[in-house]
Length: 376
Image 1: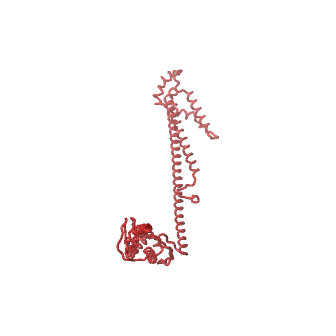
Image 2 (image 1 turned 45 degrees about the vertical axis):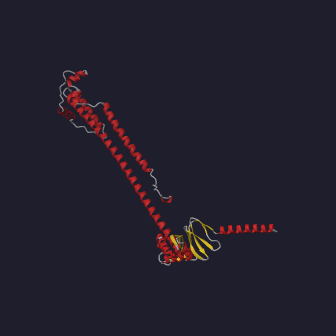
Image 3 (image 1 turned 60 degrees about the vertical axis):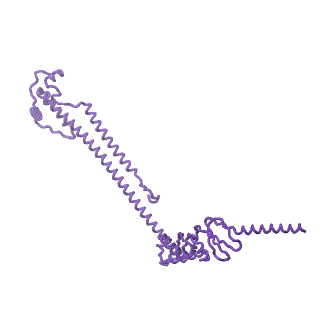
């Protein structure tokens, strides 16, 4: 019998020990770093628990945890009427944070739901005071106004509204169709302006290229004419120098000319007259006298020279040196070299003019950056 009583007491002790452990464990509360704990003892608020380990009286104490992190609330899509009577669908997002756990728990039943409902009514009121164009282009102003109104209203709940963002503004029905038509017209207008500007630039470039080509071509023709005129001038000068030298020789050698030489000159003059294009030639009756008069004008002597020159030295002693009579005579090689240089320059200018004309004939349409295929 004593053994049975002892076993009962041992069992009861174990049960009591387990119960004590359970009761003590039920009084342990751990508050996380982003939380605050509200302590109620027998239904009466006793204080707040900071983050960490806490031991409360079990059974009669209740701890409620409040999240102090930033929370996101979605404001459902709703249809509102703007100031210019344009129906529009609007939705938004609210960012809130609990700054006073006591007010957030005891001053309002559900601070999240209350904040969303307040945001819906405030959004409808603010949008109703603005026209559709203002809503579309001044969202920042609407967001700031909503945040100020909601933050002031939720301050009594221990909630701070950090930001309000309107996500979408979607006009309804005919208003949306009219806006789309306006947008399409604006895009077509801008495209037409861009096309016109591109065509203007293309025309300017083509005209500028044609102008440049004509200038280069005219410059080439001018250079070619200058070189050709220079060549003709040099040829005329050389021809004149040759005639002058011929006359000098005739003048210096006219003294010893006899009647036979005069006859030869007369025959040569008649031959030159016959080289022309005329079909009839009329000779003066006193042709011989005219030739004699010319011989008198240039100082021709009618006397036959006493000594007939047979060698070059005799002719030089009789007439004098050719350099003294004619002056400095250019060498044939120098004359040919000068004429060859002029001909080469003329050929280069002609080739340049042909190249410019060839480039101008191959000009195609000008394409500007940003122009499509149908805008070329």
